[in-house]
Picture 1 (cartoon, helix red, strand yellow):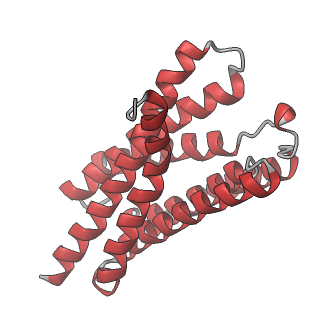
Picture 2 (picture 1 turned 180 degrees about the vertical axis):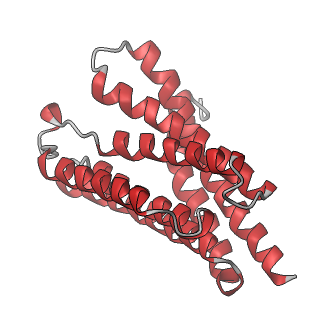
Length: 219
């Protein structure tokens, strides 16, 4: 049969690249009209696509692309923390910056010590740190909304909720991968599948957010 399970799984593996490319195309056409927050999201989608293409090349050239996992986590946390700091929190306090600095340093240490060239010994916690940190950052934003420390905006509240949900799923997946190595496949596969579906949906939402922001700024 043409449309086998393997066929659909391969399609699913390519969807993040397709959806991030869609977001990049949207961003290119309206880049001058979008605000700083959407520009951070545009660069995030560019980096996501580059990471996907690099992972394919490195996997073929070196038969191993594991090093990209913590590196992407570092870039992801850096971009989203800058987005929240400069755009949503309107320049947060030094404690927030210090915490993010420490977390980024931990990911750098993880990159240096994760042993990516021996897959059977590979252990990386960079994506766990990244995802869990972004879950707490999004919760921190809701706390600031409740305290009336930031301006309430329905569109941004939805954005923050989607960030929270996506990185919560991400953190569960990477926690299982790193800490529960003996988890049965029947438990691993559904969680992987949910995460694999969530990623292109997240990228599509970011593309929509960028487009909507450009539409608002145009008025």
